[in-house]
Amino acid sequence: MFKLIWRIGCLSVLLIIAFVLFSMWRGGGLFREVGGKSVGIIRENSKKLGDKADMIKEKTDAVKNTMKKWSDKLGSAGGPDNTDTDKKEEK
Image (cartoon, rainbow, N blue to C red; front, top):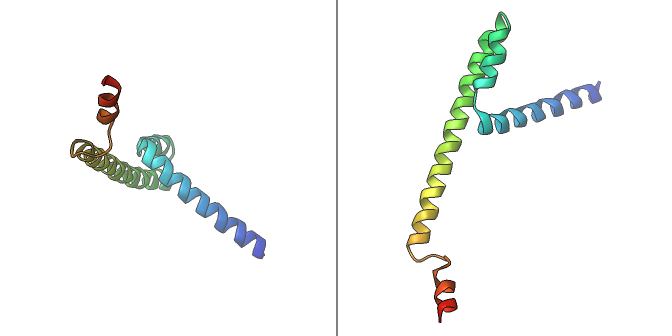
């Protein structure tokens, strides 16, 4: 009995991790597409799942844009870049 509960718990954790990673990568379109082909409670829950996946995707994109802005600011503010090595090679 303990093995069954353990396996169900591990499977649940793996499915949650897979959902989050897939949501970060693709968004919720696929979840809605699969739900559109099904009926009843699966259709309703797949729409909710798709909305949550879209929310995760939007947050991921926002973090990517923020990190890009920060890296651009660090590069233009005298951070490590290749301009010093180019000057040394020209001399």
